[in-house]
Length: 228
Image 1: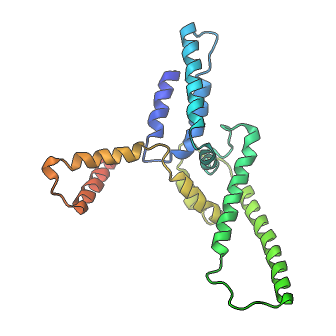
Image 2 (image 1 turned 90 degrees about the horizontal axis):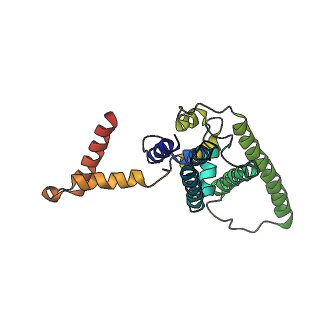
Image 3 (image 1 turned 30 degrees about the horizontal axis):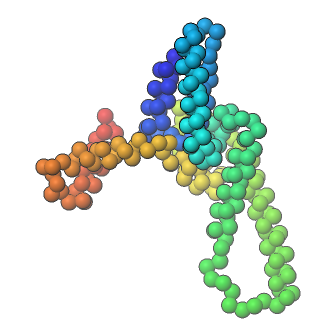
């Protein structure tokens, strides 16, 4: 059972027609549980499972876990973060809140600096107003994150990007960050597959094809493959 699921996870994370980045941690968590030894296992099976789990943890250390945690939290299927230790879940939401604050700061940056120096009184009023606005913005951001956390999780069969598209009005700022993270492929397999496809199209007999026609053929081949 564990070996079959391991192969399934490999194929799942190499997909290109669905969201995969947010699936990494839930899949690895489940795989780790599946590969736990039981009393019925033979000695060689226990040894294999132990080595497998050690190798799995080593590979996780080399991954961008912080990025994967955020992607998982922004997927309405897995936002309960059950695949992450309870003590680490709060840090994930703090990271998302900070991303929203950074996004707000960039959006609020003035295009041009002021050309005249304000009086001390005006400057004091400006600073006081800015501090008040900043506190309100922080409260708004934190409330937005809480509202998203309060949303019910959706079916694992549902598409998280479609969910965000429908909920963008309610979670506007968070939606743009979610789309960025969820659109990231879990592995380089889709990119490698694309380059492999281009290599098959541009063979020795077709080396005279222009780059524009190559792009058309790759795109057409991808469309035809999607219809199968």
